[in-house]
Image (cartoon, rainbow, N blue to C red; front, side):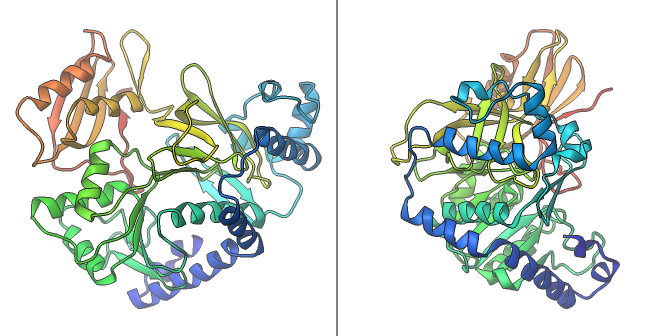
Amino acid sequence: MGILQDQLYAHSPIRLQNWLISLYGIKLYRERYGQYYEQELERLRRDPNEAAPDASLKHLNEFLQFCAQHNAYYKRLFKEHGITLPLESLEDFKRVPPLEKETLRTDETIFSDLHAPIIGVTGGTTGKSIQVRFTEYDYQIRMAHLDYFKEQHGFYRGMKRASFTGRMICPRTQKNAVYWRYNAPMKQMLYSAVHSNPMTIPHYIDSLNEFRPVALDGSPSDMIEIAKYLKTHQKTLAFRPIALFPTSETLTPSGRSLLEEMFQAPVYDQYASSEGAPIVTECEHGKMHLRPEMGIIETDDSGEAFVTSFTTHGTPLVRYRIGDRMTISEATCSCGRRDTIIESIDGRQMNYVETPEGYKVFEGDLTAAVGVLPNSIIQIQVLQHKIDEIEMLYVKDEARFEPGHEVALRQEVERLFTTRMNVFLREVKSIQKEGNGKVRVVKRLYT
């Protein structure tokens, strides 16, 4: 949203900023909702469970054939490694070398030779800026799948929604306590995650009560702050959304429980990425599904994920080492969908605590430790001050937290390490967010 970085926007009155936001919203609307979107959404509504046994291989071969014809990087890669298309099995696919972030960032041949006007930029936790390009087809297919996911839970395009965003929609130093802007074409109230804190939360609640969104999406940490305030001050919202759709951050079971309790609405998770990773969405039975026409996700023995996304024709992602850890399940789901089930998304591969012995304890293992308690810890953050010392900050649920819970949590965390690691726990009222409004679960602070 380059328009938001303009000096014109930063120094404009709020009414004009809302107009500029809506102007940008018109641009997004035209990019997202076109013939490809309408056709795909109608197909999904008509055949929600269509998934032939060889569907993944069929879609993969179609995508690889495209790469071989329109992308110089993959044309060269396939030739160097003797990759003959079409592939006869998914096992043959493992012969294709993984795509690394540094290649995606620096190799200009990774861009395909067709019109891909939609630009996506991601910095990630490594701080390396990566630019990717999407065709209108890619963008609209992805949007159709996201909207279909929300339709399954009662939310339809055109309904009012509240979105918590880390983008600088409000000047950082503004004095007016209006920390939101309105995108009229999409009936979307954008709330600034950057400005959200215990002092400003009452203003957010007043705005939400006035706007009365049908659903909420975006950063779960900000929704959790609102839920904590409501519970602590024994307040209720003046409306009841039909669903919450969090994105971008790890959501603990207790955080989900608090959101559902205070917003009186179910939470449905989703997974994607700015680079264009295949979209994974949660069904009504709590399982995360990957449709075969969206892509393929593989994992190695450590759980590191390699993603192939069939909606990345502008910048193809083939066996992309995305930096996340996942667990893939062979189970089926009672919802009846014959898709790949992602049992868990265990956090960023680079978010880990390094031990004195040289092994790694990952974010997902640390957040799972709170499972020993009965939903009495809302959020955690682990700070590694030294190679042999970590501090776990935790936000407790006042109504559920009992004496002895901290001891039980410390024992559970200590089981992940040897006695050489010193583990300290500290209760805090809230977890400090990064500059982009997100919460990092693991931070290594030593050099």
